[in-house]
Image 1 (cartoon, one colour):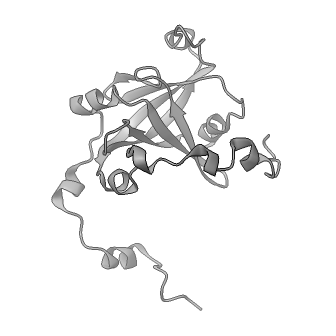
Image 2 (tube, rainbow, N blue to C red):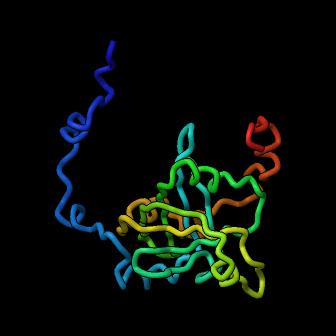
Length: 191
């Protein structure tokens, strides 16, 4: 028996919502505009989403502005895969399905920039060497993101959540530590 409270088709979904406004329909660019590129130079944090064999995966990424990623041209981003825990989940996912979604935020700013595209994994020596910094050795690999869509996300979610309001920040002592959170986790088959 079908649940009448669950939407079952795209037509059902579209009947349930009003049509998007003109600005929502036309806001997508198929490359990074000059203002988007300027905006991105201030972003130090983003979330990289990939497809897995059993679902989706999101990976937080961050560094100092200008070091978390690089704009190579209006259609291409380069993201260093800095050495970390070596689980390489994101890289494994990309070898199966190259589609990516990225959400870039700038601390204190209410909008977010969303990017969709396809990624490849580079080990080109010159590209790896270009990401060496005073504090960081060369990354093991660099993701090259070929952009297929880019657009700004409205400020409602960041504004309503109070993400940037210091008075809304949680005292870390009120939360379980990272070690406590993973203490009872089941071992992953890919670990």
